[in-house]
Length: 129
Image (cartoon, rainbow, N blue to C red):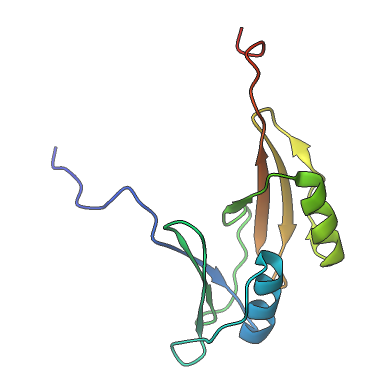
């Protein structure tokens, strides 16, 4: 079998948006980022992220919502995250769910794209026995 020339690494995640300025303001507030400039005739906005994977707001095509979250953000405090999102008046899709190794919270952005926040649970030595 031929080895794949495709790297096992995600470069960018694209989020489709209908109103670029509204999306920039909302995501910048969500992530505590300063506002920046768009590119590609105001159709692309690169959100500065920690780590290698980038996050891009893209207004090139109509928004078609997925039935699954596009990706998830990590949090170390789910209750504080819930309160913060509540202050942002997001639409929650589900309440906080504890699925064992993580707790999850699914919500929508202004274009109704599904997003998720996860908090990892520490696994105790007793739980592995």
